[in-house]
Each structure stands twice: as structure tokens, then as C-alpha cells.
Amino acid sequence: MNQGVMFTYRIIGWMLLLVFVFSTLAVAGERMAVGVSVANIRSGPGEDYEVLWKTEKYAPVEVLERDASGNWCYFRDYEGTKAWIYKNLLRDIDTVITKKGLCNIRSGPGTDHALRFQAEKGVPFKVIKRKGQWIQIKHADGDSGWIHQKLVW
Image (cartoon, rainbow, N blue to C red; front, side):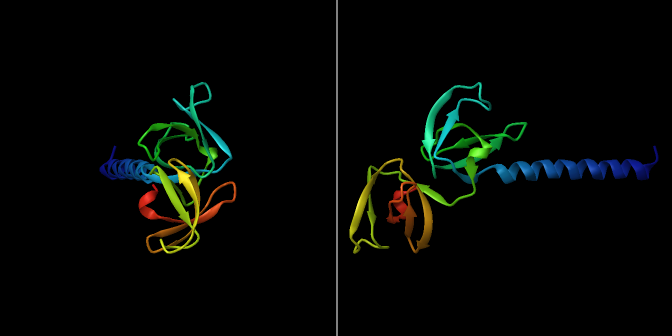
């Protein structure tokens, strides 16, 4: 082969390698949320794997990788637990989940606002708006209010 053709093959090879590396990096650490009312969380990438638990709408996850088919996402949740979820159950929605015992949900962005309700650890919410260190949230059942960012993941 002549040197021009070899050089072209090398360039194409490097370009393919870079595309692969950058597409893998784009997935790592991608924040997504459950977009259906209830989703099965599995021990592996497929319906034949054991259901470890079920999670509710708006539960945030950090996608770490995808399986070879691209249909299953390996993720980490707010507690650091890793498992698999079918990609079509995820949405690109800004969400948070409570990470403390009982979290005060207020009528406005600040402790001077009335307490609307309390949420236990592990309750997911859709983010409506952010104002400083306060987040306006809404639960799938319609309950809404404001929470301080240090109380959520």
C-alpha cells in the first residue's frame, strides 16, 4: 500500500477512537430522572434479570454507562446504589430527591415562609424553579413548595 493510503487509514482509525471515547464520556455522569409512575430497577441489563426494587416518578439517577445495545442504563442513585434501568423509562427532567430524615417544604424560598408539609428521606420531586439556595419543587401527586438545596441530591 502506498503511504498516502496508510496515512488515511490511520487518521480514520484515530477519528473513530476519539468518537468512541467522547460518546462514552458523554454518558458518564449524565443526570436523568424516572419519567413514568413506577419503574423496575434490575440487577442486570434485561427483563430476565431480577427486579431489585421499584422507584417512582421523578427519582433522579446518574447514568454511568449503557449496555452494548444502548437500551439499558447502568446508574447510581442518591445513596450510591448501582443498578440497571430500561432507557425508555428515563427522561431529561430536572429533579431532586430528599436525602435527610424529615425535610421541611415551605410556601416560599426561605425559613421565614410557612411550613407546607414535611417529606421523608427518599422522596423525589420535579424542579420548577431555583432561587438562590432554594428550589421550588412539585411531587408527582401535585404537592409543591420550596426546599433548601442542602436537603436534596
